[in-house]
Length: 408
Image 1 (spheres, rainbow, N blue to C red):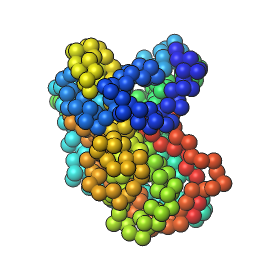
Image 2 (cartoon, helix red, strand yellow; image 1 turned 30 degrees about the horizontal axis):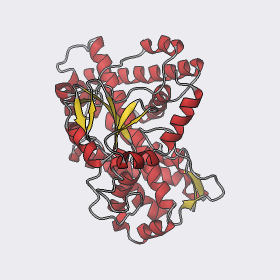
Image 3 (cartoon, rainbow, N blue to C red; image 1 turned 180 degrees about the horizontal axis):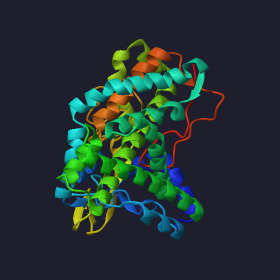
Image 4 (tube, rainbow, N blue to C red; image 1 turned 120 degrees about the vertical axis):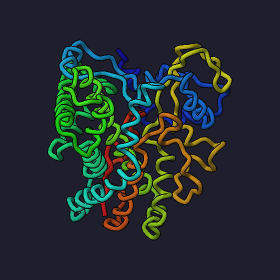
């Protein structure tokens, strides 16, 4: 089990990894980081190389937990479903099998069809606090919009979305935050409840398919019309849980960090307000500047050399998208947030190669409509100066402010 001091050091590193990234990009070869128990891949060219060499750098352990599970939690989790490999944690043919239904369900046409619903949800959320003159935007908006949208994508009843989101956050907390054995067991109960909720949807869509992602995944991962086996249910629940959590966690983080940086620089907020045509560029710059998914792990499948560093088979590397997106060799003034930055769409915020994020366009659309809405409905939006400076969450998989108090 990670000690309190070790966890504290890791948390501070997670809250601000950029000084470490800067040192690693300047160093020869790769940098070993004990807090990550991994070799840090920090330069843009090296990150791209690793992501294109999937046969040499496996994704099987891409999301290892940061904490050991207690006996109490381990006694609860078997009552649920999984774990099984997902699109994030599989390679080769297995990855392509998991990816195919996501590509279909997140096609350009499907995303375009979701945008009017997302826009209506966003307007409804802003209606709920616009007259108040102030709000905590993470809880009031950033966490809620992506949850509503991914719920619609999957095919969840809107009444089930809050419970599903709660279970998703509890899963992240269970695996990545230090908790007492009793608190771990309580989190595990919530995760199991989410899994049984999703299993109900899986079995329902087998019997009565609909035009939603849940039905698409059931048809792709368990073809035919026979009753689902227990193993098929395990796989489908695990994959749906992954889609749900990835769908709201990272987009919520992206919305939060984007608003943080825009409101922290009044000049750029005024520019955006005066010229909404800058919104697409602001979306790309926000994703580059403070990437929601900072890094994923990969494990070498054979002895390899990367950036001049020789690694044996079984070595863990941490592929830092957040560092690559501030690489001085690729970007001028990389540490600056600049919504007028030209030619900015080829960053690595959504990955690269076979594991590039299939939901990137849906995330972009939600951020784009959010900025369009906020500059129109809340033009005087600003950070609440009477509140403490926003503090980032101690995580590398959904980098965002813990809270974002704003006034207008």
